[in-house]
Image (cartoon, rainbow, N blue to C red; front, side, top):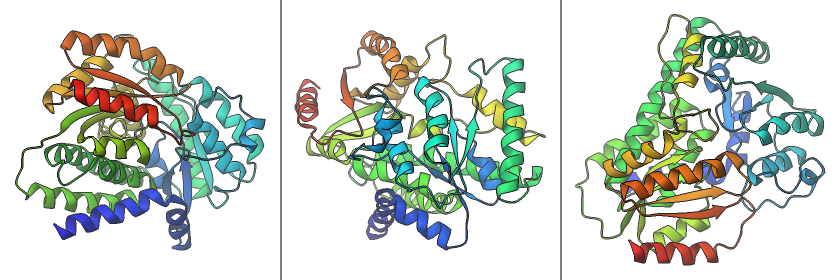
Length: 374
């Protein structure tokens, strides 16, 4: 039990101190490339001998410089990320990759290029018609451009190095899926905050090192007996679910997170990269294989049914939708989600979240009422 707590504490420290972790990696002789949401091809960075480093903004970050570039109605994930860049937080990085999967992200890259010229901006252009042959060919061409430039910044990327990186990342995805199942079985060992920290820390560590720690954690927790949980079990969905204030409210009310459909959590590791002769083709196919994400073209609206299935598998009592303020893709998805939950008889609640929020008293009242309803 003490080793379990030791690993959880170590990963929590990484999750809460990304700047210190960044400095440790660079001081240790590794170059770093920043990766903004949602789907940067991190394997290309890793294959170039560098460490991908997640950039998801910061809670409670006062916005001043970023307001010169963004209007007030842009989501706080990007506003706070740009604020950090303008303050020099990414100056030690070799480059920053920025996808363009939503309208706000389309502005983010050019604003970053203008405001943070000392850090190279690498655009990641994904096709929305990602399942078509033309979409796949376009994405392969974009990844080839990134492969060339990242190889110039770091070390040249051979097919062998990229295949090895894909294998390391697929192994990490497998271990993280196992962790999600383990946490669902042992809410008495892994709280909502600790579950979040284990996942979040993976953005700030060498994937191979993070995999070893989480694999050991899975083994230790799996050896513990499964005991009844006298609280409530929920699935969480949204872009972010890492607010310490909000997660502490869950814990206070005896609510365990037994699964998620969160952009910064399970959406990152639920789809493997297919092993193909051409590893670039595998990376492109992975993007085509992804389902149930608000920023991906999904005419069949599969996300709601996917969450319902997960809720039934994990024996969840309800679903908590954490809606990131000013996130249009998530707002567009909500009516379809609500319809799916109601049709399945699964209780749900909507809570608006924001990186700028410091007072979650309204959310606390809503969570308390939801728990009583469950």
